[in-house]
Image 1 (spheres, each protein chain N blue to C red):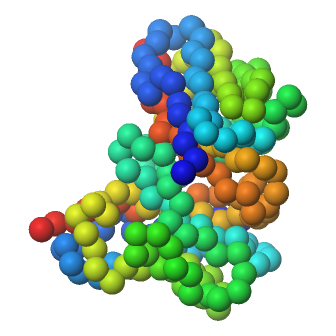
Image 2 (image 1 turned 180 degrees about the vertical axis):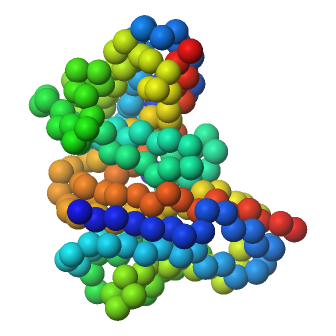
Image 3 (image 1 turned 30 degrees about the vertical axis):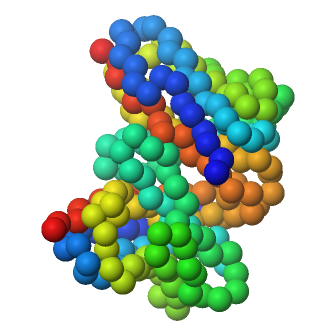
Length: 117
Length: 113
């Protein structure tokens, strides 16, 4: 089946630093990738949608200058949390889809836990 | 805007017992509905989905769900739970199929011997 990986699985950083999270589709080409954020005991919140070679589309309330998304190839998307602060601590999950149609399946990565001290 | 409510945060069942996880949604048109399972260290896995047609949907791992428009519900069921089913389960609704999905807050399932 389709596999999506994330790296790192866990990261701890100091306040003010930037952190990059990678999302890779291992056995398929991901036309569309999604980034979610999950707070404890809360649901996944969609942050942004990115299509390969295009700028990401951010959801309302998500700061695009803080959460930089790059979908440079059909197998890799990166999320960079710039100047991270403790309130950015969360569980970040990516998913990838081989197409853009409404019935294209999303395959999820295992998530990255970010802790900002 | 669509929304999903999973009223049960945590459920405990005995192995071999039946299971029903509740999900209610809010959406103005015919919804696309999903159930996902999340195990520790693993990504969300799609159990089943409803787009149209038969309102009783069969999924993987012996799960099924029934879409009831009159009740705005999409409850997940399994006749006999196995210890390996212990995980967190998310119901989701899509406004445009997979492309704009809203998740519920999840139900954590514990299975006791």
